Length: 87
Image (cartoon, rainbow, N blue to C red; front, side):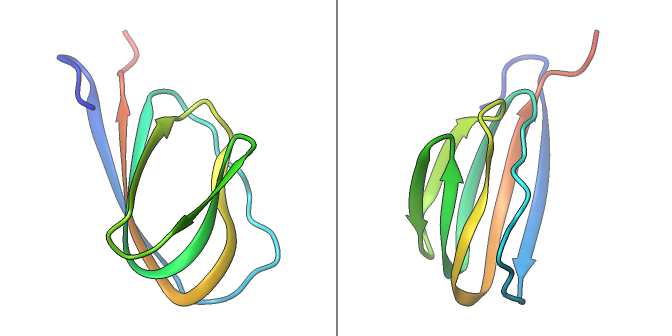
């Protein structure tokens, strides 16, 4: 994930409250998600993925992505983005 001049941005996310809709995100670079607790359906482009503890997925950040359905709370996951800094 880390090219010679990319930076890594990490974020630990905890979801504790159900919601009907979530915003979709898009950003430069690539992203890796590692599930720690809970279960959720994650949307990436036109595909939905069931994520459970121990699951990992990596995708291109420009593709619209984000949580779709919270199945088992609390949900905690680690997100790592690899982004090339502006020149």
